[in-house]
Image (tube, rainbow, N blue to C red; front, side):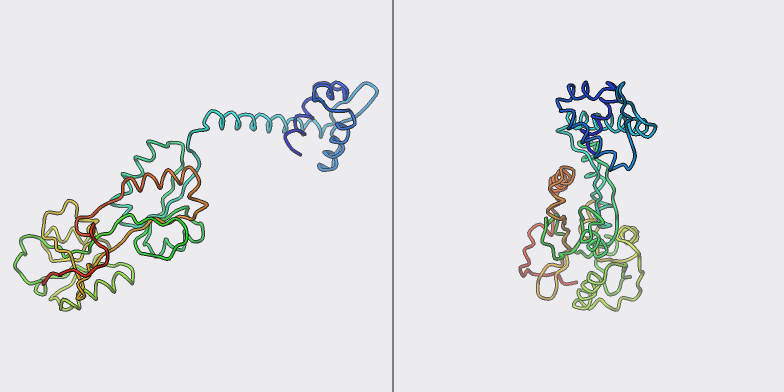
Length: 303
C-alpha cells in the first residue's frame, strides 16, 4: 500500500460509489477495482462490501480508514514542515570527542553551533582518542575529534598541533628538574612512551619523588601550587603564567601532539554534519609553540 491507496480508501468511503470515486480520482472503474483487490490481498481481509446500493466499508475497512486518515495527516504535516523549513538544518549528530578537546574547546563550539542550528539534536561521547577511533570506524559516532594521526580514507582535517611543554611554578625557577618532584599522569600507551622517551633523553627518569594524577587538569592544579614540574600540552596552558618550556627530542624535533577531525565521506554530506565541521574548522586553534611545526629539526632546550 502507498499514499495513493490511502487516498483511494478515503474517497470511496466518502462517495460510497465506485463511479463517483473514479471521477474524482481520474481513474477507470476497473483500475479502482483492481487496486481494491490488491489491497485486500495484501491485508488478507475484505475492506469494502459491494451491493446494488453502492460500496461501504467493512469493520476491518473502518479500521483501515481510521489509520489511513492518521497516516495521510501525518504525511501532509511532514511535507508542510519540510517545505516551510527547507533551508533549515535539522536531524541528529553524534560526535566522539577527545577528553581534552571536550574540556578546553568544545563548549564554545557547541554553544555557537546550537545558536545557529537549534533544530539539530547533538550528542557527545567523550573518551581517549584510541578508544574513539574504532567508534567512528564502526559508525557508532558520526564524526570524531581525536588526538593522534590515525589512518583514515574519508574526511580528515588537522585541527591543531600543540607542543608538549615542561611547566612549573616561578617559585621553583633555578632548581634543576631532577631535584624536583615529577608530576606524572595517566594517558594512552603511545603518549606515555613518548613522555618517557623525552625524560630518558634528558636524564629525568629518577626524580626524588613522583606523584601520578589521572588528568591534565589535576596535574596542573599541583603545578600551580608549586608542588613540582610536569609535561603538559599547550591545550592546558592558555591562562598559565608560570614557567613554560617546549620540549624537543635529542634529534632536535619538537615533541608535539596533533588533533584531527575524522568523518566518513557519506556522513560529511549531511547538512548537520557539514555545518558542524564548518563550525569546528572556523575555530581551529593555533598554539604558540606548535604553530610552525613541520617535523623539521630544531634546536632544543637543556634542562
